[in-house]
Length: 158
Image 1 (cartoon, rainbow, N blue to C red):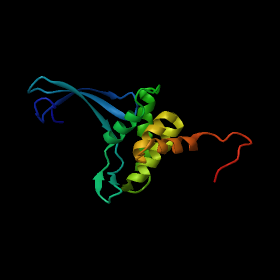
Image 2: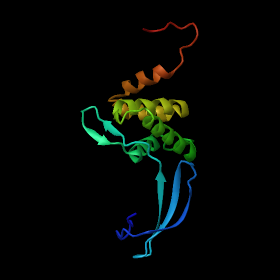
Image 3: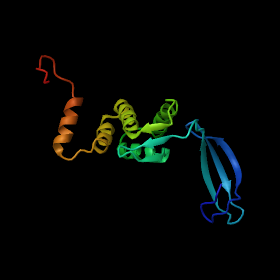
Image 4: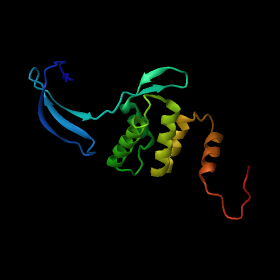
């Protein structure tokens, strides 16, 4: 593992233990060249996933990018960090177990929205506003009105 401080590739593992999410290994490392200490996390990866963007462009799946977008949607929401980590691990496991290595970005977005909808409605709307590219307040209004239950006896719009 390359030292993030000096770039030395000969670092030593000083301590290994399961991470709090129990799906990764936390390793404390030491660089003998500069004396720097840092932590790395190691996860099992079932297969290399490739994301197919709506433009047709292909890029390697990036768990950190998925995590950043979910954490932005959940910012200042009362959700425990462990729950977020479990959610992200669940999404990645679901993607890896689909049997396909090429996954459309639309499918990833739908899975994230489905998961966020079960955890926090506000985060769901935040994520959807970016994912569905809302342009005006009316877009929010239409989307949120679909979330609200129809009162009993009210006419249903079609």
